[in-house]
Amino acid sequence: MKISVVIPVYNEINTIGAVIERVRNVPLDKEIIVVDDCSTDGSREEIKMLSARIPSLKAFFKDRNEGKGAALRDGFKQVSGDIVIVQDADLEYYPEEYPKLIEPIVMGKADVVYGSRFLGTHRVFTFSHYVGNKILNQMTNLLYNCIFTDMETCYKAFRADIIQHLTLRSKSFGFEPEFTANVMKRGYKVYEVPISYDGRSYTEGKKITWRDGFVALYWLLRCRFESMDVGKEALLRMETVERYNDWIFERVTPWLGDRILEVGAGVGALTRKLVGKPHVIASDPSDDYVQALRKKVVESDRLRVVTYDPQRNDAVQFSGEKLDTVLCVNLLEHLEDDDAALRCFHQTLIPGGRCVLLVPACKRLFSRMDSAMGHHRRYSKRELAQKIEAAGFTLEYIRFFNLLGALGWFVNGKILRRRMLPRNQMRIFNLCVPLLKIENCLRLPFGLSLLAVGKKE
Image (cartoon, rainbow, N blue to C red):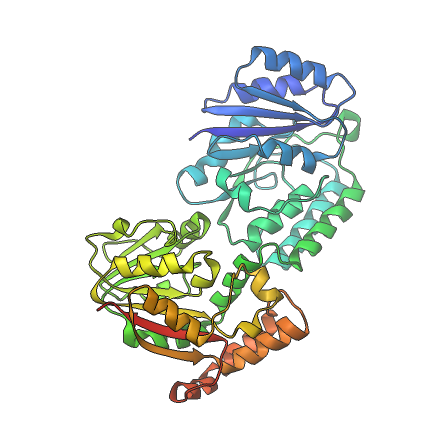
């Protein structure tokens, strides 16, 4: 794997040359990306001289000083490697320990690795910094339900593809807590490894102060109580309403065959319930969700996880699979060309196969929550039936589903204008599911969703 080392620099004339040389000497395939944050002590000139003679060094120079977070964001845009490592421009950390830092990622165990200064050998530093780090670690663990020993460490290594999914806005030392909040809220697999640390004093050039502790607290709290990615957050919350997911599975089970293609598996809330079937292919258009799903289920001859976008990928991808069921729960509304997806489902199935759909219902319910979650539409009963038949299916079944949920969606989306259902409401709804199953015996006039089945004659 190729490593991209990103080094933000601000007035580090005494150390930048030595740091770059030590990074160069690490026996890994790598590129070095240096972003100078408008230094005034000669660091810019030193970096220009080094970049002229080191082919693997990419140097970028900012016109004004903005802070570590802004410099790192600029550096991340230039990354071409498979793994990214953040390296400070001082001599507090040891590049020789890169192999240990990236090992959990290379082995496929982790998406992100933190180098913990408190688990490894370290120079004795000030008690005030120790207490400040302890407070920030405990706040992080409390807010995000984790067990970090060193959230504020510079040494963070992560898969390069993760960058595009992070929401990073802090321009200063708030990068560390904001990055951590992004990683934890998105459910990435995180490891800590011990590293060596030679902490500087202020007379040696250390720049972080007690004020930056309050900046870190601000970003920890802000990120905890805001939705960074509503769609991903909604999926993660849906994973916790286990009774509701059981109810959905109970309703679709009569229509499932033995060879199933699940389209839009997301984080795997229903995938885990399909593992008893003889042949299951779980798919999603998002590579991010596919990677996360592969960490939650065990692939075998009976279960495979693939990337698949039915509006763009050809059905030939599954030729020879003899699929008798396409299960598509809450994906069709996310696709711009849902008609193309339905035609693709028809081509994928063997004669007699069924397409089982669950989609948002009632166009009048469309609200900020739909927009925030990436919904292009909600469906009327007649419209969905016509689309299913236009794709070549015979409509076997179509019913409204989840009457109580429709009422909750109306209140939260249309009246309160929220972007997401509150966690507490979802917990209460999950507890009420056994009482709601009475609608299994009713023909509802409307509901939050439509459950439909089309058969390929």
